[in-house]
Image (cartoon, rainbow, N blue to C red):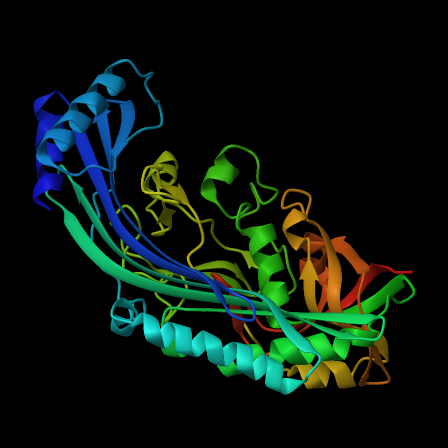
Length: 444
């Protein structure tokens, strides 16, 4: 804090009319493993980014060396850069509404003090559980990442705030072989808490997939009802919607949702919201990366587009207030609007009910390539790595290697037939299992 105050005072003394500082300390433990531990890394970083304004001239300068001399020099350089910068006609001021929302479940004291021996013991058990499930199963790759971070934000108006966060993510892949047949399985989980990861379930589901998909084959193409597992649809939701609901995209004319506020863009069974205060959410926090309190924001409510997501800059361009969605991808980058926890509101159906109501279709457990879908056009393309043919309300043979395609915005308007109750996350995106009335299947 003393160095942050020094940077701000120095910038003001050199002629800045405003200044804002962001300081981040982070420790990341990353473990890679297969049948045994292959690497164990600990990475620590500390960095500061200073934003200054001279009227409407804006500049940023960052450094990873935090001592008085370096911080003072950073402030001088930031002001010098601002002096020769072009004016930004849309600039108003830095965030002036500092505060803390009522958010819980974003810091785990145990992760900070977690012993390396416990990590190794846990991952060794994961490998054992997979091997014990079936002698044909071989773990091929796993990644565990644990991060602990501390954030400080302050500005020239005397506002300041601090927060601590923890995140843990684990991803596992295994294979099974028998004669000339091969099957693979992958699973992942993300949580804020060490106890939020069910390592045994992760291991067993991965092994089960590898065995069940030994005999998986492509299926004939056509247009069929498709049931998409919760985590898979969460990925699609994030890929397609994160950009178009970003106010920066809207203001620059990049979003297909521009000029549609108040319009019916989805069926009335569709409600999507962003919630930075969600208990235990992957990106839950009491304030955003400008110090503005986070909140729950309705994006689509009963099919009607209600709001975009704003940081201070984009909000002031429209005379609005930030929704508390300023994010910095790295400490040296300027904030941009981005979802906190993007959530498709669950309803009451179970995946089993969806399957029972399907005469012929496909249930999708896993895909690759969905990240190449187009958020502007809404076109979805993904290769099914793990799926099941559904016939007469029952799961039948495993399917792989087919491609699904459709248009997300058209699905919103009439294609999402059933929304499930089993909400799960993939990173900061949350969805239940959904049943799509019809998608194109490119098969054998």
